[in-house]
Image 1 (cartoon, rainbow, N blue to C red):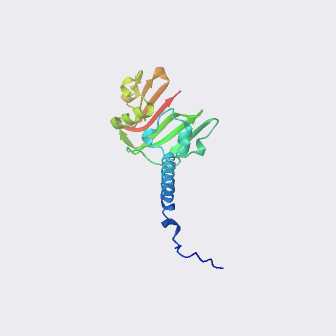
Image 2 (cartoon, one colour; image 1 turned 180 degrees about the vertical axis):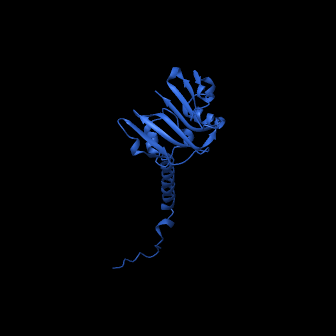
Image 3 (spheres, rainbow, N blue to C red; image 1 turned 30 degrees about the horizontal axis):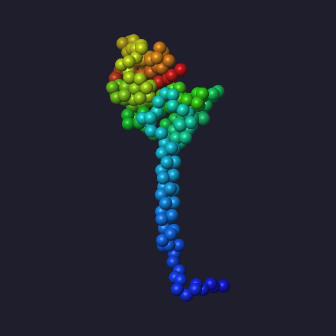
Amino acid sequence: MYVSLPEGIVSKPVLQSKALMPAALVLIAIIAVAIFAWTQRSSLKLEAVRVGIPTAKVRASYKTFSYNELGHFANKTQFESCKQDALGGSYSLHCRDGKVYAVEVNYPNGADRAKVMDVVAKISGHEMQTNDEHDDKELSLKDCDKPSEYFYFDKGKTGVELDFARDNKQQVNRVYCWST
């Protein structure tokens, strides 16, 4: 069955209609913004990782962090970074009670101590020069396999441990930052 249009009316494709074209463009723009917002929500830059950030923020950033099933016990969970930072470090976030209580950064090839100190300041939220206590006794020991250096802030509520290679005490292999 065919329907014929009255005389004088010309059939046009729907998107060429002057009334529907702006609505279609607005709909496309809304969809593009929603996709962009969702993509940004699903990734958390490693530079934004701090001790104390909410676990929900990390859990939602599935492009940056993956849930470690082996790191789950009692009320604690662990997330591993899918990417590396600019110095080649991979992150492990330790969570409990809805927030990140510890951040561990492993540098398999080592990273320069001076550059790592900037990363540590961001993660801990403290400038390293403002520490309450600094313990570097292990760095002067000759037979220490993995010498470490410790910084404490807020009367011991926040701490940072830097682990070094045995032969080079300027190359950091591991950073562990925690807060109570």
